[in-house]
Length: 191
Length: 191
DNA sequence: CCTACCGATCGGTAGG
DNA sequence: CCTACCGATCGGTAGG
Image (cartoon, rainbow over all chains, first blue to last red; front, side):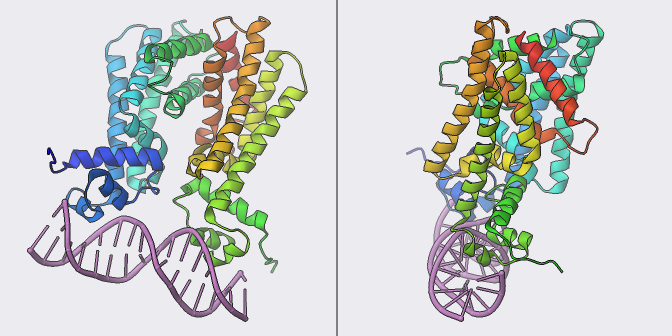
């Protein structure tokens, strides 16, 4: 028997799993307790509220995407190289933290106003990384001059954000293949 | 005073609005009643269950997208022309029936098993329209020969399905501009 | 479409 | 982390 008490981190992780699968409003504190082998009421020794759990999961998502963008920029290189790192980094965040990413992408609007605002700001900052990279690539001639950085950043992120909806990590397409296909499609669209 | 009794269609429309905004589980029958100026319990003279309402909204979404694809194919023409009609038609469905489209795209997995299965089949059939058009375009040389119909159909649909998340019909970008940008981006990716 | 309910479940608390 | 609850709200029904 290795039964141990759950940590706060365990609770947040399980919450991410259920929020990703069933949605915030589709998950009850009793569901979450069952997932961890305890009663719903016992969760309140770890967290202050259900909303609190959503905040933690979504903000972890914001941190992960933000860190990925920072890392992609920090290495420098051409706009084309930065964009490839942004794309690969986004894929890694989604696939290595699928529940967190899904909750971040689909349940952020269930946050109360102040938290939602902060998350939307973080998301806009992340998007700006893509926009800026497209602008730089257009400016230096790496990308077509009919590329519209604002719109195309949204288009590219639309493709990336949808990955959690269809990609099966245990399926026939490898992560490397996924990244290659993304690079080809986006590359062709921009050059 | 033009206060009239609500029809079943009114109830379904209002349900689509709330399901799109707050999600299926975030909407109560009392919320929906309030939206229509009646009590939650009164809704049961129009529908059998809450799930029933979700089924109606989601299946209407499936019908709309299906009809759009059928129309795009029926007109014939080159793969390139069909694809443009598929894209424009998808945009029209999303923007002319936003609540239905959002509910179809985001709440279909809240359906019970049998209905969800049917909707997923319809969605796959719709996706096959895109895949087939890409295949035809590769075969006749309209599109690059490194286009992967299966993957690229998903990528294109990812861009189209995300439109409800960011496009503001009252904003600075017109629908015509949106369609032009989509055509340019997707066209560049495929040719 | 309302009145008047039903049992079940919700998020959460007090006290250990 | 459990026991023992709380008031509020849930989807839904009977009967008009």
